[in-house]
Image 1: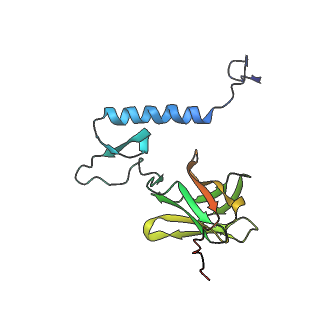
Image 2 (image 1 turned 45 degrees about the vertical axis):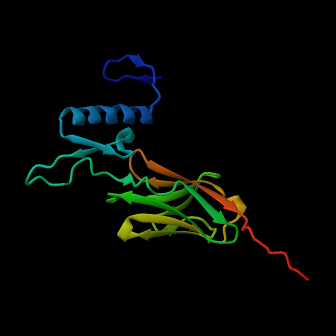
Image 3 (image 1 turned 135 degrees about the horizontal axis):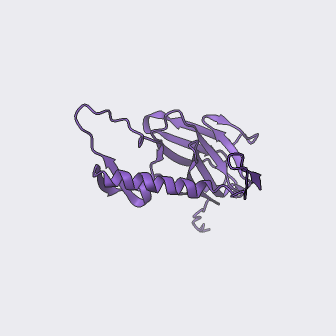
Amino acid sequence: MFKDITSGGIQPHQPYDGYKSFLDTSTAHLRTYVASGSVASGSSSQFGGVHHAQQQTPGQSSQSKWDEPYFDDTTPRNVTGLVGKSAYLSCRVKNLGNKTVSWIRHRDIHILTVGSYTYTSDQRFQATHHKDVDDWTLQIKWAQKRDAGIYECQISTQPVRSYFVTLSVVEQAFDVEPRTV
C-alpha cells in the first residue's frame, strides 16, 4: 500500500503488468494506424501475422516510428548439429539502429554474447555479425549433446524482442560396408 500524496488517501498498490500494457498500447496504435487507411496487407509475422506497410507520399521520408528493429522470420528456428563439429544458430535483425543483439542459453539463462562480445568463459561460443545480410550468428565450436536446447536471440528494445532457436545435437551416423574376406 502506498500513500497517494495528491489526494491524501491510501491507494492499494497494483502490480505492474508491462506486457499487458505493451500489448494494449500496441493494439491501440495499430488500430489507429489501420483506421487511417494508409496500410496495405501482405504476409509477415509483424502485427500478429499481417504485414502493414505505410504508403509514402512524394517528398515524405521513409523513416517513421514504425521503423523499429524486427526479426526476419525466414531464419531457421530448428538447427541440428553434429557432436564434435561447429553448430551455427542464425538470427537476422532488420532496422537494428542503435539497439544491441544478444544470445542467451535458456538451460541456465546464461547470457552468452552481447553484440560481438562474448560473456561466457566457455570459449566454444562466439557471435559473428554479417553486416551485409543483417545476420547475427552464434557459433558453438565442438558441440556436445549437453549444448542441445533453446537459445534466444534478443534485441535490446523495451520490451525486449526475442527469436528462439532450438538446437539438437546428434552423433554422426556412419554407413559401414561389410568387408568380404
